[in-house]
Length: 246
Image (cartoon, rainbow, N blue to C red):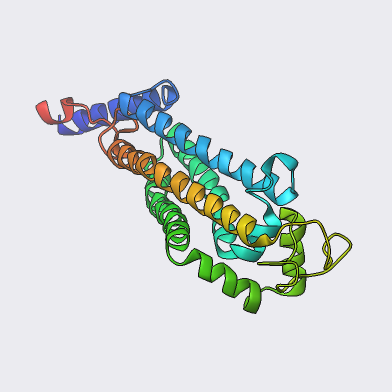
């Protein structure tokens, strides 16, 4: 009698597994929808940042002068490298999230939840570095870098991008070329370079700190909803009550 009961329960269990596999793509719980929405938001701002940084790197006109990759490479190379790493990493994490959502795989979503933390740390680092640099002795740092750190080619790139010559005057550490010479009708680079750095750093830090609450919301939704991606409890298939009642 017990053998027949076990065979009957095993048959029902196999039927339940086949049923849930056939309806796997049709099972959309509230948690799955929320997770899909949060991951779409993540993909949206990650792709936007990637496109903007790619266009800036290519030197498109609409990204100048505030996202001129030449100036950023010279004056803010660590921020530029961090931005170029964060944006594609965000796209990768979002695509991993889509794989976990549509495959209803808790293992993939576990890696997805883990990778959201380094992404949060990278966004925080960008905001902190830009905010700290823009609010602590920016004028003195730019002057020191222009005199002691920038090479002639570096100063020439900045002068051509900002249409200026020399730092405080035409004779203050200039890089002479066809446009910049001792009697050129060009302003000094001090004011333009300072304004460029203030605008770039403040806008970048504001954008990063604006994304932080959204990123926290995505992480919270992922943490709460990943274990409820389908109607099953954890990773087990539904067990027929007949196994326990008979």
